[in-house]
Image 1 (cartoon, rainbow, N blue to C red):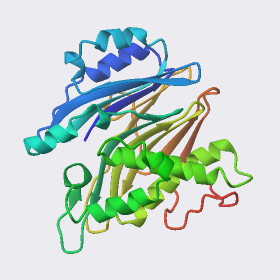
Image 2: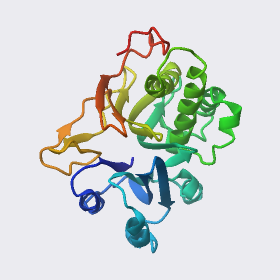
Image 3: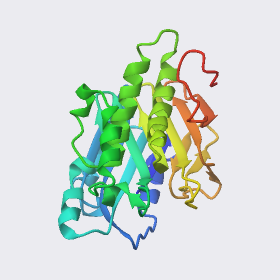
Length: 292
């Protein structure tokens, strides 16, 4: 389980970033495993990530000094307690967020879970090597375009979902009559649809962006037999239209985002659209699906 903060032209951007980074956060079931930050300049996302804690990273100050942007996302990763050999395989920069490919970046805070028939609930991060989980992962990856799949370098469910989303967008671009903004949104929903199809529980916050658009979403898709709570996600907006979304409450006035809500931001105009996640069983991401 991780934490993140996203700031879009919010008042005192760097001050809020530091306030978030220094908020007390203790996970007794997990170990902090590095951080990553991406910032937006001249229609380009720039990224830096490390397996060190930000306080222990000698490059941290230099990275922050380089950021001349009021649009940024910062993610701190945690790894659940596991045997040392497995931890060493997980604790690598290839598994740190944000993930990026060309103009796209992706941040995931949360987990995928799977319960095999007659078995125990498995979490992706520490259960992907289990024999019961491997067939599901293989099926998920089978939906990824081979030319994109070869760019997967780590072992996280986050990276799999990122390239599932990019594959969905590539397929939707072949259809006529769908505006670019809708293709971007539909590709994200298509990814969620594929994960849901294989009966995986999805308890997550997401950040997905390219040079034009940003999606932030709080997703809770669970099986009826598991009483699982959603992750926290807080929304704040300043008087000038700036936006902050974070997994921990930074402003007292922040409002908690409901489960299965999606925020869609057009970067250049600052316009924000708010959607409720459609029924994934019946959703069709075509020109006439009726999703507004």
